[in-house]
Length: 101
Image 1 (cartoon, rainbow, N blue to C red):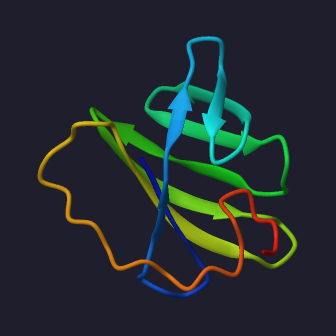
Image 2: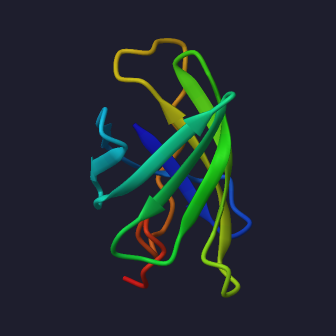
């Protein structure tokens, strides 16, 4: 489950991503992912946003940017992870890929 927040807010929107073994993902959009030494990079095919952060076990967190002025934060939880408190949903102005809604 990807939780993301564009701008300076602590309210997160959540969406499901499925990371596939071939280095692609699907869900809120399609894209590519890579992990190395605990660092995760996500890149959406259909939008400008790039995500970078760290993964530790079943959770991860980091920052994202469109590199055109839109920045935010994210956290990721593996399905079935317990002990993570969901945040209130943010007012959506952009999707997970950084596209204006």
